[in-house]
Length: 384
Ligand code: HEM
Image 1 (spheres, protein in one colour):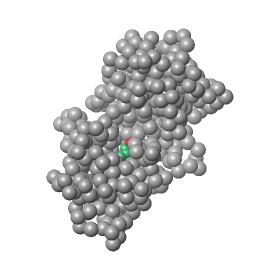
Image 2 (tube, rainbow, N blue to C red):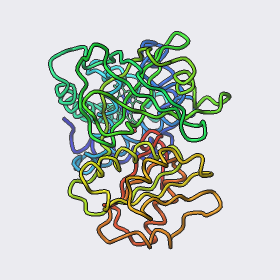
Image 3 (spheres, helix red, strand yellow):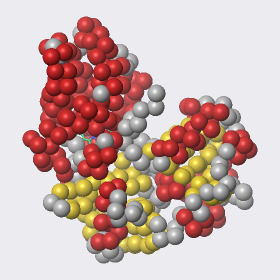
């Protein structure tokens, strides 16, 4: 538990964490990996290199500390993180390790400004948050039933592999060998893939592009420039995994979803962000509700519009709108398609989503009806 004084300490020291979150978290990860190299199999090393993951952790603790009296308000964020943790097979015994190195990093960062009271307050805050995460993650593991092996990474067989969208995206379909159990999922969720490369496991999340058909999972992977650190896992899968091969995946996770009983849906995708929106549109079509769905896809040019033909064929005339580089999506375009009760789903790069969100704000659209799905770790970018 945490005392009133400790809450006050958290609130007064939280700004230091926020301002220096990146530095503190980088110290934290460095020492944690030195002492627990096994965790290199769990953490995304690219996010470490570009600094997004360290910042996400620091910002979450800060954010939770700020809301420590009213954690309900950050429940959607907590749920989102716990889904990702479960998909990566994070266990309760990992929490004390993370807690230990986080506190050590705070202590080292504060130097002679650090006091036992400050450290105790942060330890208390961390423990509260960690216990909430552990409880919710236990429920998520329980949902996968009694078999231990279903809670981790399982080998799935690649039954289909095809290049789509101007050779820039590869679509894969995976099935369980020997008709083993495939868990159902809701559209908006992702599949976490694990590959081995250079002595470590590497895990990545890919949106499921089709509603569940009872036996297979379909994902789409963007081909990245070979010289960039960003595409190491995607490119490895594309280059070295073929039809008939098995690949490790944990069962689908994620909290992004269609709003239940939503009347009108507007999907806005930037480039490969179409993958997750595609499954949602297919789902509405299955329910006979594609008349309520409008899609705006922003791409450099038409060849890049993945799933173009199939989405066009299920959406009514004029409900599939392509915006290529030379015709930038603007406020007027949104006003034409927005109704007051429209639920808007956005997926794309962070700058893309930020721009669309501000256009929607300009249109006066309620933020409770705007749903975003980022490729980057949540809270890895600070908005204020
Ligand atoms: C992802 C927070 C504990 C491993 C994340 C994300 C946040 C976060 C905000 C980003 C989610 C996203 O991608 O949108 C926290 C907090 C923790 C905690 C506040 C403690 C209370 C742990 C523990 C582990 C862990 C104990 C395992 C040792 C990871 C990994 C990712 C992740 C591997 C995925 C991102 C990557 O691979 O770079 N966590 N986490 N976390 N977390 Fe945690």
